[in-house]
Length: 620
Image 1: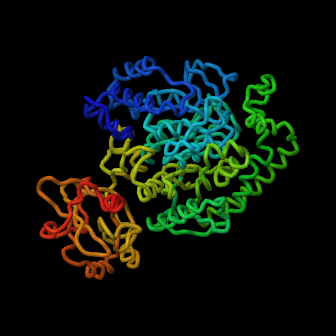
Image 2: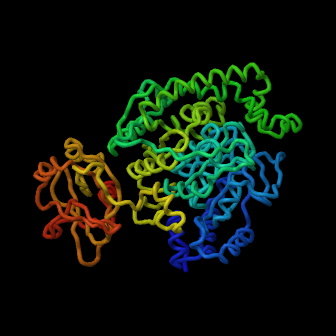
Image 3: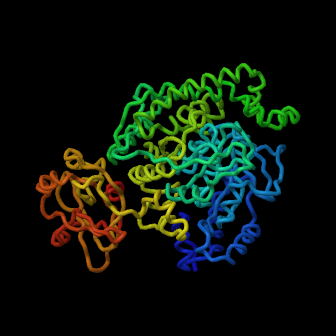
């Protein structure tokens, strides 16, 4: 048996149940990945191989089919308790060793997940940068000169670099979303109280929540199913019923006007957000203008208002009795809470209620709110030179979320020209987690082709956590997972159409689809029965997809939908040797799509090895 290539939850579960590999091999793979990136200070406490194998030995006595997260490696932000392992909150003088794990951690372990250790963070979860730690500045998984985002810095980087399948973070001001955006990950910030915060070192106790980092929305959904649950011993826990994203019909997403979107001079992020909004529209959602002003005013309350006093309430006594234990920047922020009065607190609550009432009206016209996750990304050197101002900039689109009791899914939304990731956040009301993940999954698939910082393609053939789950789990997870869902047009009067070349999104002939009402559905691969050729002629240059009996390979395609009334007119534009036939996809289904007559291959270059037209163009 060998270790798997991917730590995606569905792939691991399917492999375990098929006997392709064992849990020990997966843990060795995760440990090897961690060793290979030891220069990046991801960890505060890493469990030893012997400690991890004790979890493995206990787990291997149970059937894989019994546990929803059997043998899934995960990591834990070091402000969340793991029994027998110090909790430091990135402050060595504060450290204590809990006898019991936080309930959210214990639930995951009981369902088969295996902890690998505790991860680095901004001290006392005060920061969005990932540099405010005596254990070192956590580095971005794509470019070590840049910040990882925080405060859940190590948790995000561990998943992005392939140490773990998922990670727990916390989120008060954006700590579970900003690191996701900076490392090409999904970051789920559930509703307040949905996951227990008992056993979590508080930042702002009334606003804190435990967050989830994962490579895909499907993986985040699988973790949510296990981690969520009412904890009667947690005074902030709530029993929250699921709420549909939309009652029916087209999903409406709130889109702030350009005048209210500040990217602090980062034109790459500005362009990426405009493209992400257009992409969401191409998936069938309708943009509705929204006034972001009350949301931004709410965001300012978190650090400019009396809520900083709640941070002082959490660790102020420790800070005063242990002078010098905190980093200067952390002490300055938390110490600002000393001067806040009870009158300030009440006045802040009054203003928040007014803003909540205004923001609530937005949901009369939209189902979901789309914003950038962060307005820009900074180098570590820049943040160290100006730690307060740049950190405040990063919270522009995240700080209002918990004050307004919203759910957020941070999802990859594309790339900056220098190769750094860009992310957007879909926000909704409490109970919308599952539907938001489903929508975010479609946007994720339309936006990027790889997962985290790994050379892992976003391949629809990889089993989802839902399809690999036990019968008791499938009913709940399958409503969120869409990776293995059939290709279905949004309306009965449309046909799906697989395109593999110049008609793909942002390529020269894509306008022929859009002008006829075409909408993007999904990016995936064909079954491994095709050869791919660069045809002579052009511009525009075109490829040819030829079905073969032997020696075929999977080729990347995009599936669009086209109104039936427009289909004939579109087909008339297609020149020989191309035509429309039935293309077999990697899930075994067939859809209409571009094929090429075999004779044309004799005079064409075989580019099958590139796996798709975009990869060929990039290499060329």
